[in-house]
Image 1: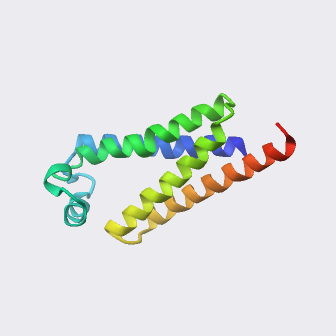
Image 2: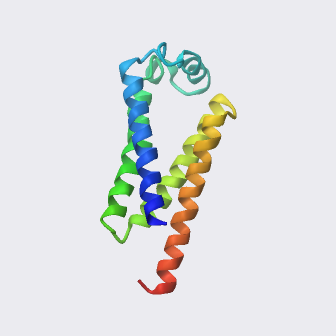
Length: 138
């Protein structure tokens, strides 16, 4: 189970880092089809003239919320830190909350649904792992 968790946290973390870099390389979203998304963000989110002129702020938020947190959780898993499963659980919950926000902005779509599922699997795996550890007295 822990190997699966390592792969999952690394996958999600690297994906978030790549997404952030993509937003910084082309902050207009033109090259990757993000222009309509930027318009929806401007229409639904607060302070559109401050935070949603382009995707640069969104890239920093994505990196901080889903990139760094997932990679820190992966690091804790590799180090077998006592709080690793708590970090993975937090990351799963954070990812699901992130996707709920995306559903509110863009509606249901395949990629959001998949990532919500990944967050749910991540959270369940952490809870299962924590219960096993508690039962074993480890």
